[in-house]
Figure 1 (cartoon, rainbow, N blue to C red):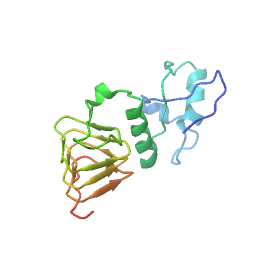
Figure 2: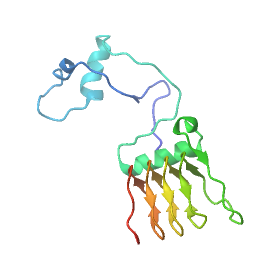
Figure 3: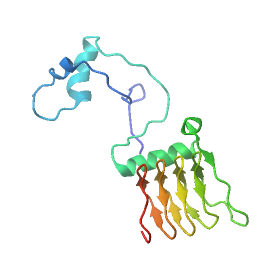
Length: 165
């Protein structure tokens, strides 16, 4: 996602830490509000909001698809790889490298597992024989059973796919 901005403008990216009483300042209690539009301008004007500026990549991860795209983009750019504790997986003998596959510690990949597109696998994952993982993110302790196909997906921690899925 590319966001068009004025050259000197900034965008918010981070975590809000608020005193509960600050939420009372939202215009209408009981209806959803947008902190960045309805609250932040007042706090900045009153010098009660603080932050810092960083020149870094920014990703909107508000939907599963955006989260997936952001994870794969971060993996391709080698951003935070040491914090993820993942290492590139080398293709098995005779296989041409067709994907960037990053795998966490304790992850096991069957020699006949197939990868297409870039993927990130967390710690202690297992991809069994003849399973295919295609442009996906697997959180920790995920099992992709024999013959399964995972495509353009985010698989949550501890999930084990059923046979034939």
